[in-house]
Length: 111
Image (cartoon, rainbow, N blue to C red):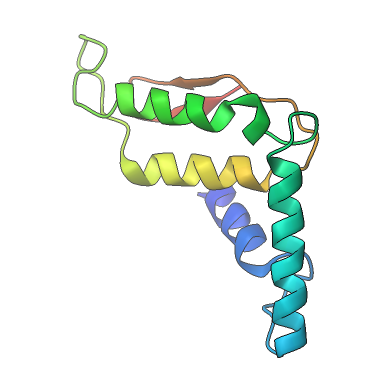
C-alpha cells in the first residue's frame, strides 16, 4: 500500500510536488510529461523500450483466472496490474528492466 500511494503521488503531482494551477504551469507540466514519456520509450533510458510493459501485461493476462497455476492460485486482479504499471512508470530513467512474475497469492513481482 505504501508503494501504491508513493507512486500515485509521483504521477499525480509531477516534478514540483504540487498540482499545476495556472495555464503556464499546466503547459510546463504537459511539456515535462511529453519529454519524460519520450525518454521512457527510448531503448537506452526507458523501460518501455525494453518490453517490460509488454511482459507485465502478458503475465497479468496469463494469471487473471482463478487456479492459473493448477494448484489453486489466486488470480491477478486488474487493480494489481494497474498499480504495477504505475510503479514501473514512476521508476527513474535508466533503471534496469525488472523481470516480471506472479505469485500464487495474486501479487505481481518485479525483480
